[in-house]
Length: 141
Image (tube, rainbow, N blue to C red; front, side):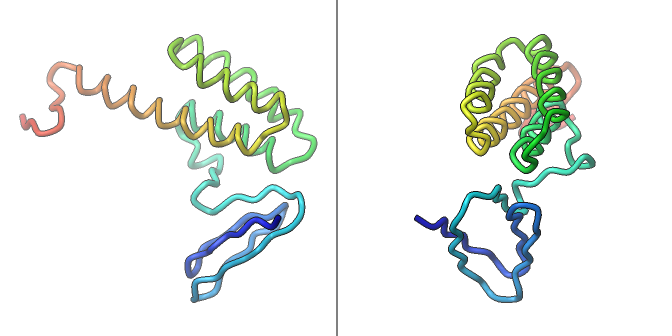
């Protein structure tokens, strides 16, 4: 069964090692085969991976895109251990990412890594709301 992908005008799609850029019209693609596929909005670069959770996502993304990603795997292992040490409550998400990687479900590992990014953002938002002198939503100084 083919994967159906609808692209907005100008949207980019990674298929394998190729970037496909859509023209000025909405397009529907049907993709058969076994290649890594990522939408532009799901792709992180070294420059945009500016938090620990985003760097973990980037490592998983590299494992997904590259066939032999020993370096990305080593990097992921180190960063995930550090993340759990700093944020022990993240262990269930990290465990899910680890399980998906171990079973070879790297796309699902990417999705779990997105949840880690959301979790990190929630923690940062709550931490800044508790800091004295920092206005919370709806408050002004």
